[in-house]
Length: 113
Image (cartoon, rainbow, N blue to C red; front, top):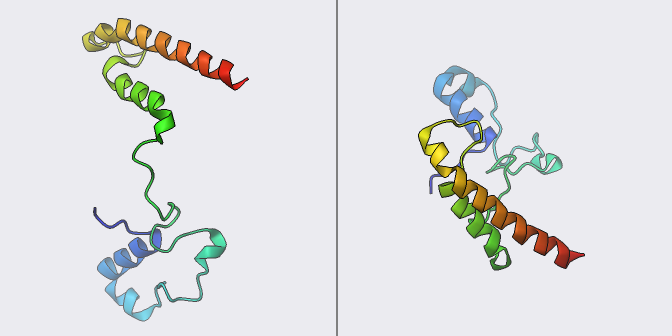
């Protein structure tokens, strides 16, 4: 996986690449720089405002129903504004997909009450 630059790394790289004179005469932020207390602002030095851990690639097993529903949505749903022939062909499968999801969600909501 390619490394992701934090905002500070990106800024430093842009400055040193395009403004070499500035980067030599100025102190750019570094990981050891006490001037920036990133933890105070809940900013990770390597990932910036993104969380330091990678997001889940899929939900835990108890959410398999929702995972499969979303996976099938890619094939059978289209935007209501889409008037193309491909979108029109998906209208019936979209309706069935929504009905199936509504019946499942109402059952889950009832079980939670």
